[in-house]
Image 1: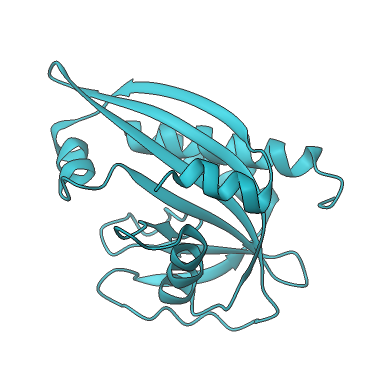
Image 2: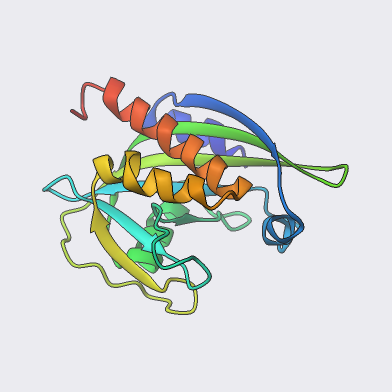
Length: 186
């Protein structure tokens, strides 16, 4: 299934981000633990007050937070996957609204290249209570703001020195820019 084409047909044309960088052996292990997965869906979930859902995984440092997301299972519809990931990671029921960013990354490690795609979607929820479903995967979920993601959280991610977080910052920056350029999202 061509995730990009399916998502474009339903949620519009995304901004495109091209990114490449050298990653550590540990990051390579994380990226390749599932040899059949070379993509993820990231969700910018906003509630009626325009708060942004953020998650922290158990292996993240206590001050590292990011928007939720995950993989599309083989044969799974990408909309169903995004809605499922939102529910699993945050407990929120969402409606997908816009395809914000298609990020095409090349992760390099010791002469090896891994091509990866991240599909960033804007989603709305009327829910206000966060309740992650899997404590083994999600340590905590909380509400934040787009300004927090663009400011303090951005600086924390960059300060880690990890390539994956530099990638996430580029992804977040592109999504925030896409949000600013959409008339439907002030």
